[in-house]
Length: 347
Image (cartoon, rainbow, N blue to C red; front, side):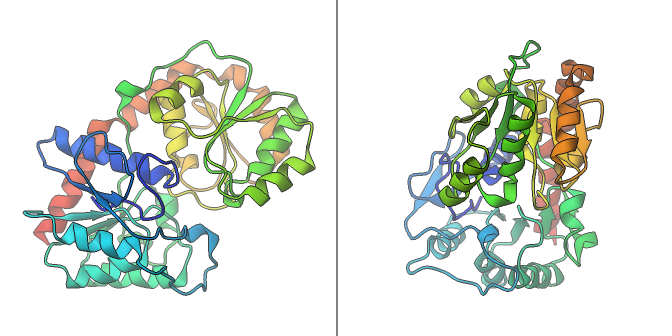
């Protein structure tokens, strides 16, 4: 398992890729496979051995424009990670979770087949070309998390859609919430945090934000537009503590400005029996059943968010947990990944 090169596992910098790495590892172990994770130094591996790799971290791709060139720092950790993954003895397949040009280019030179699980929608012309070229060379070797994510690529119809999953044993449903809302994710422009703050200001309902501040200037600017909004920055928390805190929320609010590849936050909220209010954009809109497990509203409309908050009393929280159990269990995700990897190896 080749993790993201933007940060160590367990730090929160890697966003949803960290959870995906953990879930796939647990699921494949449960189906009798051996798994080794390759990740940057200081990574925490809860389920499988982690090969710790030194080197400079990669800059997250969402901060670059569509026509940005491929850039790597001196002594790049992503190059050392590819070398380390290729050196794991006896490996049948490398699962690449890094949204980075180098693993796609290097795959053609490795003796071990590489299966790429792409964690971003189409963001970069260079990355689209690298992904598309590898898909031509080895059909079926590239997968994504949602139909909405696949649709952003010109070759989306040839991508395998895997969804995602959770170890539901780690998420306790909470049927008696407190009177606050929650936001979970990086504090950065593509997450639309200004709409979250505006919602708090408009409704007077406290919103607690869980995640790292990736863009401090952006966060300061957002706060300056609504200095009296009832928001609390809670920081990053590991899964067990996050789910305990998340369960107390009346709802989780998701306001992406971009196409979220999947929306692990929505899946985690439902596992805690927490409804989700999300813009009709990207993967979260596929996870949430409007009027049943939350509300899917007009993108970029704070007015629509306000209306949805007023309707939260209509949602049965037990239906939220039931949705997670039916669609997003660890076992279901592991079966889909195993079938995909078997096809890649056979190919």
